[in-house]
Length: 66
Image (cartoon, rainbow, N blue to C red; front, side):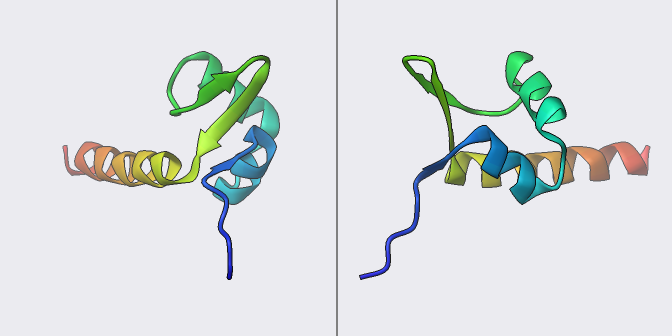
């Protein structure tokens, strides 16, 4: 059976979307990217990250039309 991670680390998420780790952590600090905390660990739910990316595409597309 193939298992896909439900959550990934901020470093993995930054690589996945193609931005630097520092920028990703800045977005987390601003609560721009959905995440959960378990103790000191930060996890990024993959489906929520995909939804966030989709929302950014829609938002940027609307701004471009103005």
